Length: 518
Image (cartoon, rainbow, N blue to C red):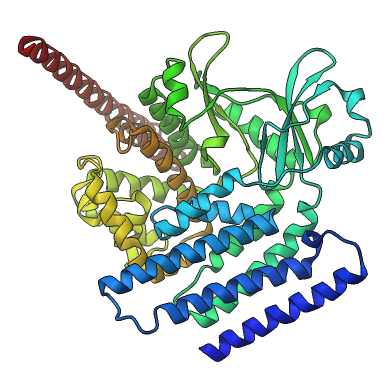
C-alpha cells in the first residue's frame, strides 16, 4: 500500500518540477496551466491518502480513539480538499459545492467544510468581463447599457452576475461566464477521473466514480447559458399556476452561450430568517410553497431544478401585489426524469409516507437499490430505519435521530458508495436536490412538516392517475381512474383541514390556559 502511495507522490513531484521549469521560461498565469492544476490535485490526493493510511494504521478499529482520530483525519482532509478547490477554481469549486451538499451521504466534517465554497468562488476582473461581452455581443458596455456596476452582485464557480440598466430604463442582471472556465473544464474532469481511479486503487471501498460521470454529463449543459435561458422559460410556463413563484424574464437579444441577460430581481436568501422577520414573511408559508413547487416538478412533470442552494432561491414581498414571492434563479442544471422512473419514484414516496414496507422494498429494488433498499430508504428520506418502518409522515424528526444518522453515516460509506454506483443516474441529482431542500427546511425549522407530506402525496396521486389514464382506451375505465383520483385528493384535503382545526384548537386552548394562569 505504501509502495502504491509512493508512486503517486513521485508523479506529483515530477509534475510540480516540470511545471516550475515551464513557468520559468514563459510568463503565464500559473492557474491556467493544466500541468500545474493536475500537479496540485495529485499532490493533495497523495497527502490525503497518506494521512488516512498512516493515522489509522495503529489504532484499534471501533474504539473511541479510532472514531476520534478518524474525525480529525476527515477534518484535515476536507480542509485540504477545500483549499485545492479554491486554488484550481472553476470545475473544482463546482464539484466541491456538490459534495458539500451531500448531507447524510458524506461525513459531517466534509460537508460542513466544503459548504463554504459557495462564498469562496473566484471573481473575474472588469477587463475580462468587458472582453467576454465585446467578443460575444460585438459592442462596448456603453453601447449596451446606461450603467453597469463593476462590483458583481454575486460570483459563482462558473460565472458572476452584474447589475446593469438598459437604455430604455429597465434594470437587468447580466450573468457573464468566467473566460477560462469552458477551456479548462474538460481537462479538469479528466484530472478528477484519473485521481479518483487512483484513490479507488488504494482504497477499494472508495467508489465515487459516479461523481465524475455526473460532471461529464452536466458541465457542458451548465456552461451553455442559452440552455439555461430555455430552461427558465420552460419552468416559468410549466409552473405558471403558482402565483407565488417568480422566474426572471430573459432578454434574448443580449444573451449568448457565455452571457445571460435577465430581469433583475432582488430579495433575501431563503435561509435568511432575519430578513424574513424584518419583511413580515411567513417562514412556514415559504417552506410549504417551496415543497409545492418541487413536488410538482419531480412527481408531475419530471423536469427538476437541481441546484436549489440558498443563493439560488430568493424570497421577498412582491412590489406590485405585496404578497410573499419565491424567486428561483440559476436554471442551468435540470434533471429530466424518464416516465417509468418517475412513476416508480412516486410510488416509492407514497410507500415511505404510509410506512408500506413491501412497497418500499418493491419500488426501491425497481429503482436499482437491490438488497441495499433499507439503506436507500434512509438515504432518500434522511430518516432512521425505525422512522421509515413507522411511516415518515407519522414520526416527527428529533434531534437524537439526526445525531444518530450523522454518527452512523460514515460507518456505511462503502455501502453508500456502492448504492450510488447502482442507482440510475437520474437519482443522483434528485438526491442532491433533496439534501439542499432539507438543508433549507432545517434552517427554517420546518423539517418534516405535515404540509410537505400532504403536497407530495397530492402530486403523487395526480401523477399516478395521469399515467393510468394514458394507458387505457375505455371511457368507463378512464372515468373510474378520475373518480378514484378525486376521492383520494378529497381525503387528503379533509385530512389537511382536520390538521388545521386541531392546530387551531390547540393554539386557542394554550392561549386560554396561559391567560388563566396569568
